Length: 98
Image 1: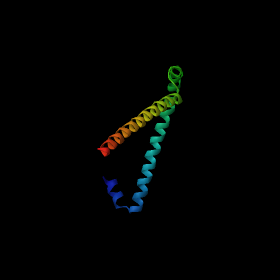
Image 2: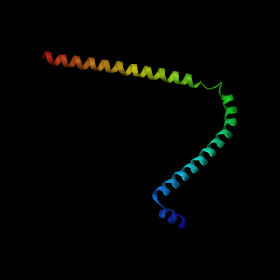
Image 3: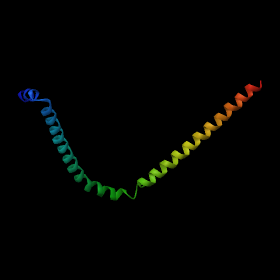
Image 4: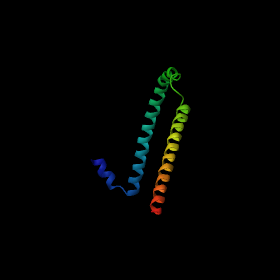
């Protein structure tokens, strides 16, 4: 607790500097650990991906397929909106003639 009390007694400018310095230090440690774990996993993942690459569609193909499905659903939605609008217009025209 003595460290905290000493820090509280320092000017605000010094406390802010210590805050940024400590944050940068922690972030550097986190990034180093992340990079080390990432480089360790890539060799295992590359070997696994080589085996499954032939079984799975490519990212581009699955995006293309999803886009086609999305396009089809949007088209169906617009057609449904058009038919509902036409039905409402016919109902409105029928009410005006009465």
